[in-house]
Image (tube, rainbow, N blue to C red; front, side, top):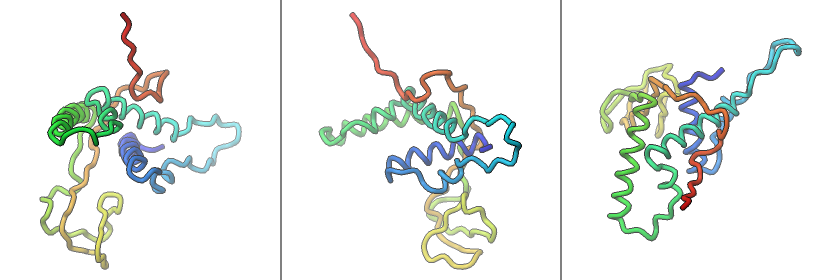
Length: 176
């Protein structure tokens, strides 16, 4: 079973991978594949992890939409707006999404050093935690920290609803 923190990480990575590349990264797909069953055929089949992961990904998007209107912002064609108008919208989206993120999870830097400064990556470092780019030699390697990375140290999502798990934001109809 994939841990709650990893599911949260995969949900974000899957979402942005779809937005940027139009597909889910291979390592995420591999991680979400069900493990080979070793139990007897009479054992009950557990619910697929991929379905719950996608439900959680939709839940995260719904929370960011509700609190920060992130999906509305991302789906909007901004070409007709002036930079000043976009800047105002970005501030509102940023404030709402940041508040929502803080409510449901705590993030900490993967590498707690200053970006732009030299850092050393020790032998045996987890490649999921630190991505080394450029002219990579044998560890230990020394390079400039370009991004500290983020790690979820607390995840506290509300329970999934029984219905409407694919709805990011319901349509609104005003009557009257």
